[in-house]
Structure formats: structure tokens, C-alpha cells
Length: 113
Length: 114
Image (cartoon, rainbow over all chains, first blue to last red; front, side, top):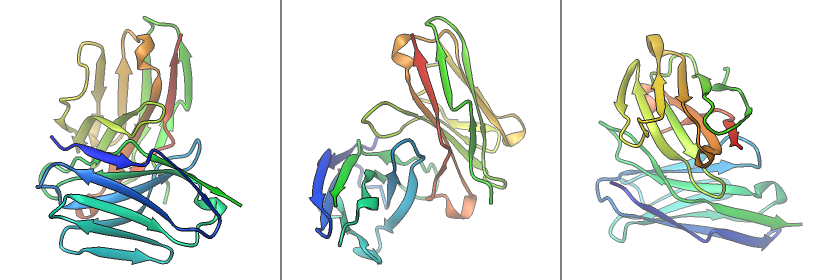
């Protein structure tokens, strides 16, 4: 089955800095890569996703890049704000048929004001 | 629209006791997932339903865990008997057929086994 590795486990930045979280996956059949944000005590929520037919997707201050050859994808957050502090999870899955996202272990992002 | 509703939010039981969690997915969402989330870990799939059919339950410890989704709407996850290692957050999620990539999660049920 799919195996998703996520790094770093903890990331501490100053407000206004950029943050990058990286994930690798093992199954070449995976073609859908969502990112979820989970605030303390809250539910995980989808913040951005990318499909394998594109290499980059951007939504305001967040962007995701995908390198299918190397089997890795990354989340980029620019101009970080304290409200970005949360745990971020990457996931990988094949779309169509048996859609079962496999999640990484999460990155705890701390943005210091 | 109402989100995924789970209950109870918190449950504390002694080991060997039974426990049940309930999930009401978003109306019209045909796919329902139960995930286990340990502290500091990502969600791990326990079981996935397409309507009322369990289509992937390979990770469900069937000796003590059971689940059902009657009429393809609400779902219940049961543990009997509970063990100390079952302490975790049990997350329910749902998705709709034409947007199957986007999972909508509930707030989770936090189980503590003493």
C-alpha cells in the first residue's frame, strides 16, 4: 500500500517568514495530493489539493508543488501569520476506484508573533 | 450546510468495557470513513463505506472492533472490549461521489481507556 513520509515534524517560524513542509510517497499510482490543516482540538480541514496533471497550484498565501518523478510534494506558506499555527497533514491517493487517502504524520507549525 | 456530526466528543471508560461512537455524515455524501488518530500522528483508516457497503475494512481489528452503516446514512463504530491501547481520537469523515477527493471530517470522539 501507499506510504507517506512528512517532514519536518515541527516547524517554528517568525511571523512574516515563509514555511515549507515536504512529503514523499511510495505508490506511483497516487495521483491526488490534498493538504489538511488541523487546529488544536478541531477537525482536519482541506486547505489545498493538487492532481498529478499539474506541477503547481496556488491559493493566496499557500501553494503546493508536485514532482511526480521524484514522488514528492510540498506545501509552501508565505507571509505566515499566527493564525497559521496548526498541524498540517499531507495525503496521497489514487483517484477513481478505491479512493483511500493515506496521511503523513503531520507537521506542527508554530508562528511566533 | 451542516457538517459531519460525531458523538460523544469525549468518553472515558475502564478497560474491558464496551464503547460506541456515532457519526452522521453530510447529507448526500455517499462515502463514509472512520479514521483512528493517535496523539502526534496522522489519521489512519479503519473502515470505508460506499453507501451501506463496507468496501475497505482491512485495517479494522475485527476481534474487538465492529462498524455498521444502516441505510447508508449514519454509522456506528463499536469497540468491545476496549483495551488501554485504544485510547485515541476516532474521526469520522464523508465525501461526495463527484468530489471524492475532499474529505469532510467531524470533530472526533476522544476515547480514554483507564
